[in-house]
Amino acid sequence: MKLKMHVNGREVTGEAEGRTLLSAFLRDGLGLTGTHIGCDTSQCGACTVHVNGRQVKSCTMFAIEADGAEVTTIEGMENADGSLSVLQQAFQDHHGLQCGFCTPGMVMAAAALLREIPQPTEAQIRAHLDGNICRCTGYHNIVKAILAASGQPVAMAAE
Amino acid sequence: MYNFDFVRPATVDEALAALADEDAQPLSGGQTLIPTMKQRLNAPSALVSLLGIEALKGVKTSDGTIEIGAATTHADVAAQATGYPALAALAGGIGDPAVRNRGTIGGSLANNDPAACYPAAVLASGATVVTSGREIAADDFFDGMFTTALEQGEIITAVKFPVPQAAAYMKFEQPASRFALCGVFVAKYAEGVRVAVTGASEDGVFRWSEAEAALSATFSASALEGLSLSAEGMMTDLHGTAEYRAHLVKVLTGRAVASAS
Ligand SMILES: Cc1cc2nc3c(=O)[nH]c(=O)nc-3n(C[C@H](O)[C@H](O)[C@H](O)COP(=O)(O)OP(=O)(O)OC[C@H]3O[C@@H](n4cnc5c(N)ncnc54)[C@H](O)[C@@H]3O)c2cc1C
Ligand code: FES
Ligand code: FES
Figure (tube, each protein chain N blue to C red):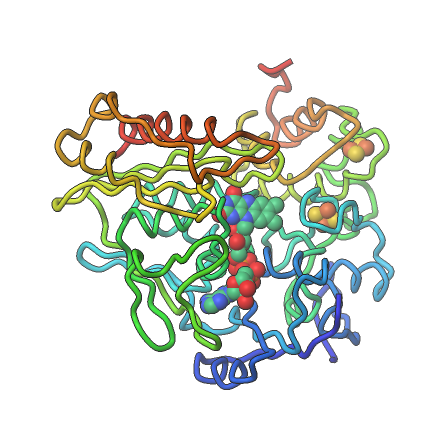
């Protein structure tokens, strides 16, 4: 099947079988390997992208279901000049990553949260990250990074 | 995953025509179906996507009833079912934000997972499941684990909830899957109180009639004091024994009554 979508603001066309997952289309079809596949069973959130502004797990959606949609991946998060966005920079500044495998998903989930709630509480951040698993950081520094990116102090209750 | 044809109807009639082939299957949010297809537990010849059918989406409120289209996502129910706060809160507590942006009420009910949240709300509310051919009362819809009254080729189009005077859903979350290790929905109507339990029984969602009688007489957690639920027929798995679940049902029912609004 032929399909057409906007990925990170660019129109792309491609071929996909019915069973082609959006994650596979982005990675293998478009070479956008920033979207990671951790579990492939909708548990870990490493594959999180935005479809029409909403965060989804791209391993649990068919590419054809994104036909005609606006898709944003981690590659679309940088500033126009190629520098890191405020949110990405905050992950770096607050050591919100170690191995970095979960990070694309964490950034995409956090960006969706900040669009909905520009200044979330720590509890709201933790609840929003329910579907994103990190086996390295213990989450505290991820929460700090998101607090910082939203312009709030990074003092946290649960440390 | 085995391959299949992908069909994108724009109307319910087109969907039903495509589903006349008995190897075809409806696809809603895919949050349950895609994982089972990956495991090759399910291999339809065609998937008929319901998400492009506008008539199956949205939340409508009219005197005392909330009607939710089958293809309405959990996130949209959480945001839009403001006339039935306990239902909106239940939808907002399903899985995680990404699951809520795709998963739908129709898919959840058709699947009837024994640990799913929506079946408890539908049964406790005495809701009506509207399908492509008929209206099914909640008491007749759920038919044991992963089984419903739906026939081959029949799809859910909407669910109609009578809005209660007070209600609450208490979910004891299984932290890894985020499904209900046990969940209790209590709803108080002029005609009496209904209590539905999910996550506990080997037969899927059920009504706890002793608690309903006690709470209909006195709507207070203390009305449950003398009651106990038998562990017979409750699920035992690595997360909890049958006895533990039977105990949790009572604890959660009390909490639901105490927080009902
Ligand atoms: C990580 C994770 C956590 C979750 N946590 C929870 C939770 O806490 N509580 C909970 O209740 N659920 C939970 N779920 C399940 C989730 O709510 C699913 O969205 C839901 O069970 C299925 O809905 P769907 O729209 O995705 O259906 P699909 O996966 O598309 O379909 C499920 C089944 O229903 C059939 N079907 C779909 N729509 C219709 C229709 N309108 N008429 C007839 N048949 C239809 C399909 O053919 C399929 O057999 C979780 C899922 C995941 C992946
Ligand atoms: S790879 Fe999609 S949720 Fe883990
Ligand atoms: S940084 Fe390694 S999994 Fe999160």
